Length: 334
Image (cartoon, rainbow, N blue to C red; front, side):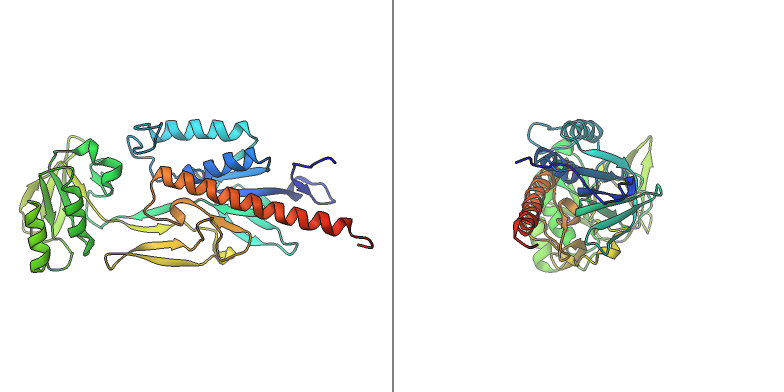
């Protein structure tokens, strides 16, 4: 028996009637690894990528076995070539609308004027970092303004690191970063007042505390030089740790009616993410999700693994549907 591994096509046969097995929205680690997995499973895959990878400003990726320190752009180029080897087609575009059509397939409208169709969707759109509203923070983000010690800690070890408290997580960040440097300063900024327990814990790790709200960062010669408080005081730091609010990137996807929920860290609202099973299934049948859009604190290697898991579950879902169709077609009188 001949097995068919190609897109479905409506009777009209027009290009706009092509139905891909899967459309993946987002071309980061999760989306690309899912594309690789599905391509190797002989699925027809279209990857829609707007080119807004979250780690683009970073100098290197870390804790990714086999790719330690690789520049994000180099990693993407390598991953894109690998996915393309197995038939993945990529279009550079943004999604402006998505919905389930009357025939059960999904329709995804792109900002280049085209509409693409798919049996299943995989959302790998990542997240948006909402940074503290302090002049200079956005300018130096992913350079000297950091948030993850597992991403950047080794590179800034033993340097003067400040932590900007915007909630209760600030104390925990200061304690965490003290593993990489003995020169840690917690700026209380807009965080809650420190109680005796918090002060004792900080003192035990030799973390200095500077009270008062930060007004701006002192930047010169294309680098961070220090932190300036509202009363004019200045503290020299080489790097500043912040706690962004992480929000799943969902522009153009409201029509899919995918459930989202808040993420809280140490009682602080840290963002909003898509609700999905460990295999990537969302609240909307046929729509899967993987990577930072689901797990807001995930690193690149974890997002890639999530892309693999979601792709495998999605492929099994399609096999189940294909089998049901084949059985129905074989039944007498059908």
